[in-house]
Image (cartoon, rainbow over all chains, first blue to last red; front, side):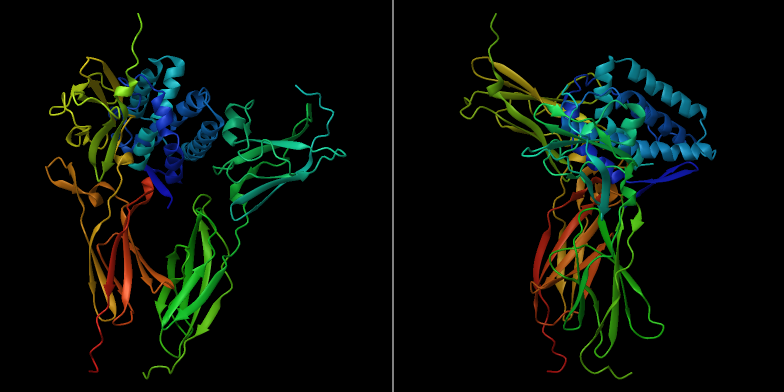
Length: 152
Length: 204
Length: 213
């Protein structure tokens, strides 16, 4: 059924299974374009489940914003098929971000030092790489982000 | 870019039932000519972040009929903008955009069709298969005062599905409704159907 | 300087995984000379170093078991094969990014079907995987997939089905006709990853009812 994400005092439900299904359809072709396999943006040291619950919502909120503002926006799909699948992912993650923004409005999405520190580490990994390459890599790492959310 | 002398399609609207979404419009008619149409869409993400980008519909870019099954284009529970234009050879109309954005959570959910049968003392149900979005919640009870109502999640399939072992002489009633996980909504219940079991009621 | 095309030496380098048994397989040239040898390396995604797989260096067969090397469920991996033929020509090819959690297929469960007079009991046995917990215990599929459940169907003379579903391991179809044959199918389902095993099937006959004889 629907997945309930417990992110500290922010609790949201999402159709994570549908999102994973959508990503699995393009995973191999997107990941195959990522040639920098010595580098990983979403590393275990910054994972959601390794973060204290109170900071999980803020960390996820910032990661989703990074994806919506700088990954999906700049990704150039090779064909319409991939284009539609990526659109589905972007719109699905947008609904999650909107739910997190509601938590933020209800003061249940605080940004503590741990969230800020981990997000800045992710951002630095992200900004170390050339623009077009990092977009492809980040999109290919959506399965990591979805697994983090699965375990939240 | 073709000169837009062709009139743009009018009266765009979406009919959506049980997660099947169809966009329709008034046909553009040119005597003895076949007019084609192209449909494009934008999810909420595209509207907010990449508003210049429209995505061609999977089945209707182009199409000859003044309607388009957009079910496979609407893949997230956000509001979608839709537009259509007509083309005739090199002539192209301007785009017509759906007045109100469409969200699949507004789909009409109808009570499921069901068929109640018996096999010996087994109460069986066969449900209409409405596609992968749908789960079926079936309620059934013995028709007697204070009877307990049982609820079962049933997967539709080719064959009827067993619900309960019933007792001779008793009557049992059944109703069902659908649930769509993607939009978190139920349909109304189907009309209740009751069946009387053959044979003498067992002595108490 | 003309570089020779050696891509024909090596094709379809990929992981074949089921129940977390991760086997790297590849194809050589259809009529590849018997003296073509293959060497395997693997690495964790995000790390720099390629590691040589001991036991799969300069081998002639076209598969290599990388189960132990790719057993961390939170990691993603790559493997690559280098083929070298007798004339010294060589080619190297790499797999797609591999995650055993996402890619492993699920084998049918092991089930004991026990017929009785008016019911059939089905006992599903745990499925152990090569994955070990930190304390060394072998993990079962149930340990790994929190949302794992079993889906059972009993077909009654081609006219209807009984369904049972749940996380427990013991199930019983009741209210059956004695001395009658039934076809049972049992599958493992992992909804979150939309994985479903191929079914285990058992054909059983309920016992005759001897109460009045």
